[in-house]
Image (cartoon, rainbow, N blue to C red; front, side, top):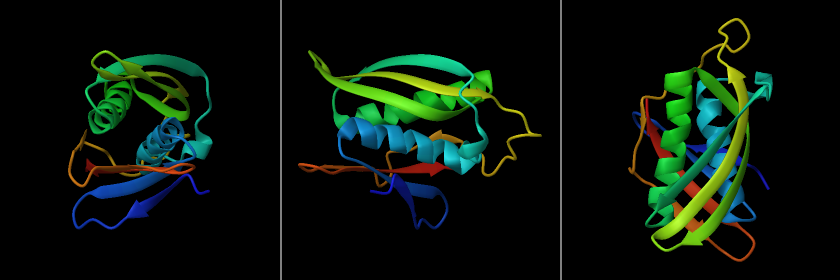
Length: 141
């Protein structure tokens, strides 16, 4: 199963990420997000960040997850390439516990591709089937 694929959009960048579980699809969505910005195969797992989020539904959680990863890129200069996500039920909806690994952005080692300004809810979609999950997102560039 492929991890993600790009989808056509007239002005922004969209992707579909896949996984056997929804958690794995969230991991692959994070990889797609950073692949927009840099070649993630050049990013070494030198630093680890821990993330915990809660949201009322799957779409809000996907948005918050990718938005938090953008925060680590924009505010702390991190590029990330490895992700482990656990999704749990919570009294308010869903909870995400995750770890992500990467390193500080270095233009000599990480040629910048496209800058991502923000996450959007535009065309966001989540499909959960028995052995296959798909999440779709569009980012503002």
